[in-house]
Length: 357
Ligand code: GLA
Image 1 (cartoon, rainbow, N blue to C red):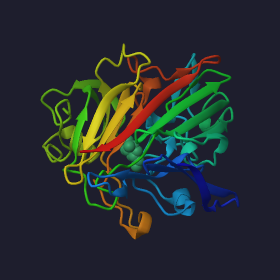
Image 2: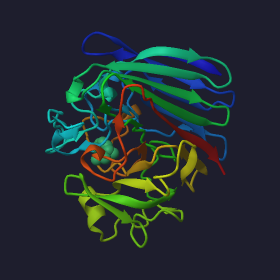
Image 3: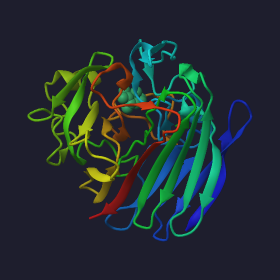
Image 4: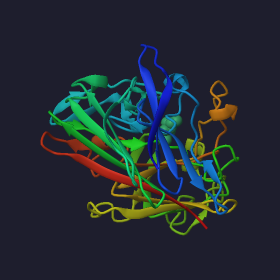
């Protein structure tokens, strides 16, 4: 148990990336790169005790630099989309965010946090090893106001959980929304599609998107829709339903709002589970974030960038549970508040806990 590290490749500017592996006494391990704060491997046991990598990734940093998909990355300064790359904050218009997704801004812009080399702010050895990465985003970077000082701590707990703790501080009022974009496949990342994996989400509503997946502002009750995961069901059960919201996104790519998100407070709550009947692997999602983006890897099909070991990218071969605030929040009354003021701390935690049954 503890932390080991190894070189992970060279960036175009000559800087070296490193891969840190955090392991507990039971052999559960998580590897994270300082490039993008990226989760590269999670080795979790199945019901027979066999360990497999349950997240999609690449073999070296060179691929993470150029490939799309944000595999395993820490995404910011604002995850998901901001319509037309503009918003108004304290009466001032910010309209120069980078447009990288149709007419909209996605996942922090041209060089978001997912594509930066973070520094190591600290490590803890021992039974529950942790790694803290830090990034300072200057005032004006990617069009956002304020110097944002971000740290993300990855902890491997003794109970086979990965805890991710996000903190950010600013010197001017700004907007922040941070997440991790791990692509999970509980059968092992190269085991086929995830349509038989069974999901439960504690969400009463989801956000409707337009044809570019920008929220229309409508929060749709999940009741009677393919978006109802309040009783566990296979991801594939309603995947091909004749539903306009599913069709627009080519599958699930929607923000699910946790039941009682408006009053939930700071407590970490169990908000989701995923289970793979074939291997018995189970994932529990605990968070104090108000929402999660369920994304079924609908764009994971770039033949130019095979995954680790040469396994081809294929749609629906993974699911993402991106805990977050609502996409495009700065442009919608009644959405989550993504404003961060000087003196405040953006402080959220998400735990992915693995077991097998
Ligand atoms: C998020 C978005 C998707 C897509 C992926 C990355 O999940 O909602 O539309 O951009 O990230 O490919």
